[in-house]
Length: 77
Image 1 (cartoon, rainbow, N blue to C red):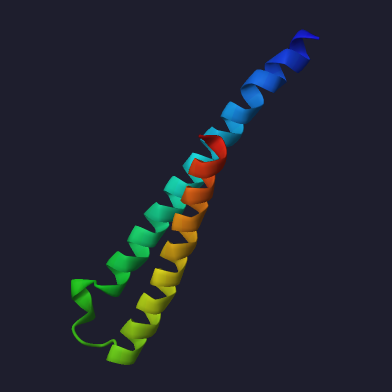
Image 2 (spheres, rainbow, N blue to C red):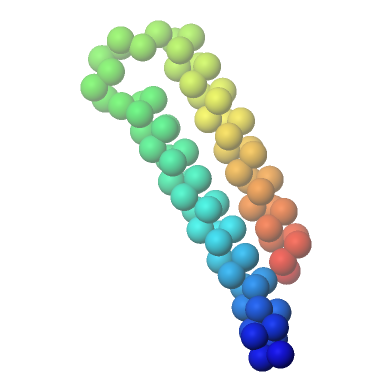
């Protein structure tokens, strides 16, 4: 019975921590992708269209992550 009580108490906290860490990791990966796009070593080798398409993907991913963070905030608080 004590084990069930521990899982009931610790389960939601563990899920919240895991979700927050995953979101943090995804935002860090997004930051890394943005740094690669605007890297100073490109020296104009990437065309405007390529940068625009890469930025569009980054923006879509950012919106998706913000929605996930909002869902986490709404459901847990």
